[in-house]
Amino acid sequence: MNHLLGAVAALGAAAAWAVSAMLFQRIGTQLTPLITNLSKGLVALLAMSFLLLFADWRAPDWPALLALACSGLVGIAFGDTLYFHTLNRLGPRLTLMVTTLVPVATAVAAVIFFREMPGIVAWLGLVCVLGSVAYVLWEKHKSSVQAAQHVMSGIAFAAVYVLAETAGMLLTKFGVQEFSALEANWWRQCAATLGLGIWLGALPAPRRLLAPLQERAVWRPLLAAGVIGAFIGTWCTVIALKYTYAAVAATLSSTSPLFILPMVAIFNREPISRRALLASLVAVCGVAVYFFAQN
Image 1: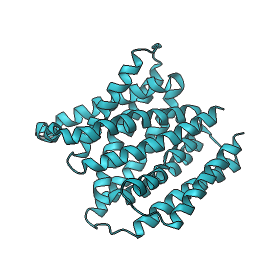
Image 2: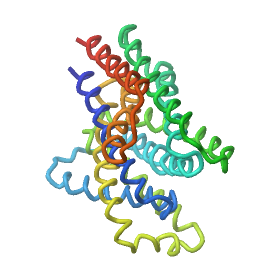
Image 3: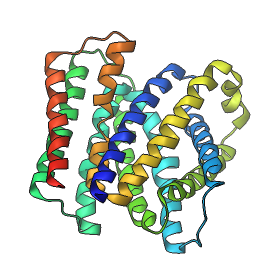
Image 4: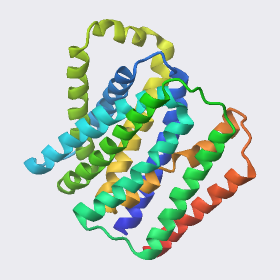
């Protein structure tokens, strides 16, 4: 049952990030990646702090706390900022294609460091999911025109992002075992927010970077994206990492593009090709195979 809970939480994270991606798209390039990351993190931190007012705090386990703090700095502060840089340079389709490498790197690292070995049937389901997501993104990229500017720097940002995100997941997997998922996520976000604040303070003219936040049109989607993505999405991810394999959490959390397909069809009136729909059905079957393997 723990594995099933973790898998459901990972799918919930993917859905939350799909919604937040649509909201972040409204902000566009009005905010720098650093300010976007810091702003959404503050929103998530305030939401988590409110919930934790009603929770029982436990004595901190210092090695686990250190791992969570490092995961916040590496995975959220550094990794998410790299993600936004990659997004600005490669566009959403190519960036999402790159994120499919995170589950692969996480699965390999989890076997090495945690000796996690899901069964053959479970691996088959996860491969179906990951392959389907990659195909959907590849097909959408083929049918769109991408600007060639900043491609090389975008690829460099993407490569470091994959490493940072993988390290963040592994550190969270280690640290969350001694905390509740909400507490663990709070500690991660505290470390990330502190790190981002120091980063911002070290830059020249930080007030100029913060100036766009004075616009109400920026804050509306930013608040919603912060609550849905940075709060609910990351909380679900931590729950997934606590209760199931790191490879499963990473793979199912990467299915956001499949959730985005119906959203863009409904709200942006973008048609969904038969091949993309078929790939989505294969991914759903892959999820079903994984759930079957855990019963």
